[in-house]
Each structure stands twice: as structure tokens, then as C-alpha cells.
Amino acid sequence: MKILLVGGGGREHAVAAAIKRSPQHPLLYTAMSKKNPGIAALSEEVFICDEKDAGAIASFAKEKGIDMAFVGPEAPLSAGVSDALWAAGVPTVGPTKNCAKIETDKAWARKFIEKHGIEGNPKYGVFTDYEPAAAFIDELSDVAVKPAGLTGGKGVKVMGDQLPDIAAAKEYTKEVLKGDSVVIEERFIGEEFTLQALVDGKHLAFCPTVQDHKRAYEGDLGPNTGGMGAYTNAGALLPFIQPDEYEKAKQIMQATVSAFPRETGAEFKGILYGQFILTKNGPKLIEYNARFGDPEAMNVLSLLESDMAAVMKAIVTGTLDQMTIEFSKKATVCKYAVPAGYPDNPKKDAEIQVIGGAGNTGSTGGAGNTGSIGSVLKGPSADLIIYYSSVYEKDGIIYTTNSRSIGVVGLASSIEEAEKISQDALDKVITGDLFFRRDIGTPALVQKRIDHMNELRGQK
Ligand code: GLY
Image 1 (cartoon, rainbow, N blue to C red):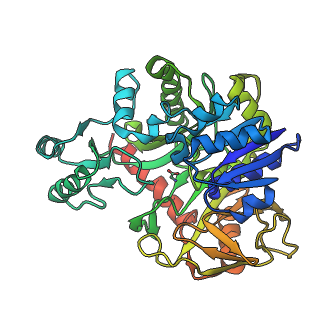
Image 2: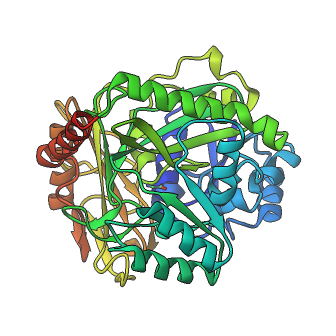
């Protein structure tokens, strides 16, 4: 079996590693804009290309006799790479361009949810002109301001957070309107969580819930990033989510998947990522993505025990209901090591060392806490996996780019223990001009989330 993977980040390294764990021993072909050394080491052949060049990727797939494909990032989905692969006879995990609008067009997504009577939307308005947008900000008085198009997770600004007051919200609205339409939404108060599902058009198989950390610095301070790290609990529910809240989030996603054929004439086949905020009134939708999260993919795919090639087959053939998808009941903590100065002024082309690592995929051979690139390093009670993200290799040395560098995932029976594994590897195994957030997954920060939700529920 030959599988093509499109994309070259940490998320795709986790997808590649899951595919290569398949007992069917698929051959992996990859298409990416920059050679990720971890993915390259797992690949039969790497096609360096513009990941949005649908025609070139479909031709490569045909030439290599690819049986199935997986499109990782949003940019190729939005460019129609899945459409081109299906048209070339390659069944593909990753929605068509039209279905990917759930992520790539925030205005379309809000209207779609509203039109099909799906719960979870805030009060919102979509504007192309400043005056009505400003009037709506006055009406809601506490808002989130979102560019309608793709921004890599960095375009959304929220009052009480990046926007100190109404004047700042209006100023940012003006700025967004220079290049895009703007979505103004009621601000929700609560705790964010991510629920990802494998979707075959009709059926959803849910991954464990994850909480990401968008801010660059400890204490949830500093600029927004693509995500500095994320954790899962042992089992499906994060410690601050109650079972009925989880069920509600699942229902919202199920209703969304069911609505796609009515809206677009096509089924959504791929990964649906629900970004929820848990409020005192239950889960509300912040946004959808049409792909795995990054870093969230590294958490959940490190736990996947089922055969990834079989999972992909079930997604493309609409038969997910006929298989049970198993995730290990361990907790995970994934922390990203990022270049000094990230995200505003990242130090690129700086050397990184993963002790015993570089571009190899095997065990690093080191005792205790040295890492294993893309494969599980088993410990007595906990495991470690290291994924390469936006790095490149030259003459056997790994260098930073201007984005997140290395994802380090600890897996253990508790979040606390998984955090220690991840942090220990960051302290002892990875060197370079990098930084990371020590607080992600620590008992103190997890307890803060639990206390916050308890306080909100008490206000009901
Ligand atoms: N971690 C956020 C995202 O992937 O969009």
C-alpha cells in the first residue's frame, strides 16, 4: 500500500509516525514545501513542492501509484488539493475545498451553523464596512474580532485579552477591514478545549479532548501563537469537563457533519476540529478547523492504538462505524520548543541539537530520558516521543526556521507525570537558542482551569 502525506509540520510528523506504525507496513510518500527531516526519514520519497499546487501533487500521486492520501494543513485544503487527488482517483483524507470553508471562511462557517439550526454559535455579525461593524461592537459591548479568512490562528483578538476596550476593538476592526471582511462576535467566558473527530462523511470517531495554550509565555501572557503546547487526560475528558458537557460538544459536531451534504452537496471526509469554549451554559463554538490541530495532533496520534492505514481506509470508504478506534488511556503533555523571539522576531537558522537525534527515526540509544524521533521511547512507567516541526537539516545538523521547532510529548498514567517526562526531555535532550512554556500541564495550571470552571458553574 502506498500512502501520500501532504504537509511538513509537527502535526504531519505525528500523522507520518502513525501511518508507519500500521501493521500493513504502508510505503509513505510525502509532499511538503520544506523537508522536515523527521518525516523524510519515514518516507520512500519526498516531493518538495508548493503544498498548494494541487495539479503538481495530483500528478506526483498518479506517477507513484498512490493508493490513499492524507492532507494535513489548511492551506492545501483551501487550495483544493483533496479535490485534485480525488479527481486523479486517489481517495483522500481531508475535505474538499468547499467543505474546508468551515475553517477557511469564518463568515461562511457561522452562517452555515446558523442556517442548519446547530447549537453553539455566539451572537455574531459579518461586515465589510466599518460603520455597521462599529455599531455592532457598541451593541454587544464585549466582543471577539476575527478576520474572515485564514490567519494561522493569530488573527483573532478578544476584549479583556488583546483588546483592552471598545476603542481598541474598533481600531482592530478597521485594520482587519483593510484586507478582509470581519466577523464580530459576542465574547464567551470559560475554558477552551479542542475536540477532534475522524469523519467519514456520516460517522464520527472522537479523539480525546485536548487543551492547547495559544499564548507565547508562561501564565498565558504574550502574543498569540499557533499553540505552545497541549495536554490530554488519561481517557477522553479533560479534568474540567463534565460528561454531559462532552456529550453536548459531540452532538454539535455530529449535527455539523450531517449538514454538509445539505449545504455543499458533498460529505466531509477528514478531520473535523471543534474549538470549543466551555461556559457556565455549556460548550460553545469558537471555530471549526478542517484538519488536525497542531500541536493537538501530536497528543492524540501518539495515543492512537488502531491501525492508521485502516482508519484512513474507513474514512474514505465511509465505513468508520464498522471499526472501533482505540486510544491508549494515558495522559499526554506536548510542549513545543520554539526559536528565541518567536512569534514576533524568531531567530531562524539557529542550530538545534536533539541528543542522539538529528534526522534519524530510531531510538536514540540513550538511557533514561534521551528522545526518540517520531517513535515511542518506552520508559518503565512513561513514554516519550519527539516530533520535528518547522526545522531543516543541512549536513546532518538541524536548524530553526521562523516557526515552531520541536514538539516533545510525554505519555504517562497522569497529566502530572506526562508533564515531567516532556519537561525533562526539553531540559536535558534538546539544546539550542529555544524556549518553551514550563507551565503547560503542571498541576498548578491544570488546577487553575478546574477552579475557573467550578467558579463559573457556581454562578449559574
Ligand atoms: N492549535 C491550534 C490549531 O491547530 O489551530
